[in-house]
Image (cartoon, rainbow, N blue to C red; front, side, top):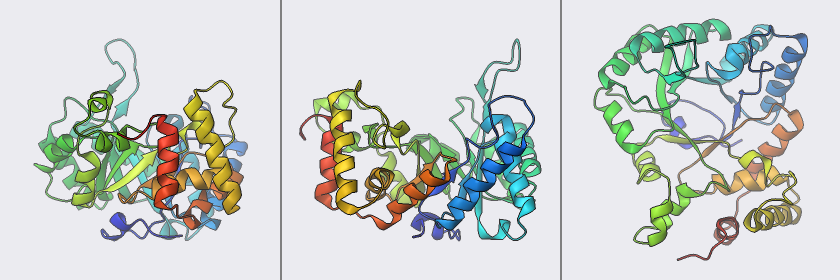
Length: 325
């Protein structure tokens, strides 16, 4: 599988596709892990490795910490596996914890440091490759975040840092105190949620007033060498086999076009949808969120599909449902 170029420049030899581990560990509750949870996690990891996927994405909140915990058990069972993969996790989201402790975002130094210690413990590792700040905290103090990053790096607990769902201005604010590169920005990008493309197409157009994407975000990441990752890259399966009979016309037509292209190329529906993202020159790295080995293999086929400019535009225009300006 081809490498993610932006991360490769920072010394991380990783696949273009990432396996997101949000579905590992059973339900979003405090129930203990089961033998079936471990079996599913093991099967997912093995399928990813066989398909050439070498990067795995976590967050401390996924299934209330159980996603990392069960992944740690897989690592413990497989000597040498840790050296073959890149592990990324996130922190910063805190769920409601009773009266006066609402669902909130927390980039305080204390929370970042304690979160990483807990992540390392659950995964059973000494060093996390990449830590992302999960969602922008309006109360972020860049100097405090930078202090946490510095302590984590000096202690050998984290190799590199990035963000998720941040604008260029927010990244620049963080960089004003942190003098090392931000390695990643993970964003919701897919063939259905098109603001990230439309924002560029609609410059100097009235239609641009309806776009909901930070101005210049992809361009900033490209110029700064930030790896753009896509969460939700399969658009909740709308173009990969889900019943779309009750969906708007643009969704139905796009699903049909994806199917046609997949049949023409003898590949999976997932491969076409992901290849559309991967054709963009920002070097987007899809983070697929499935634990199904068959679907993991279907997604990995995207690495062997390169869409033409015309095919890319055909999918884009069909999904947006209106003519180009």
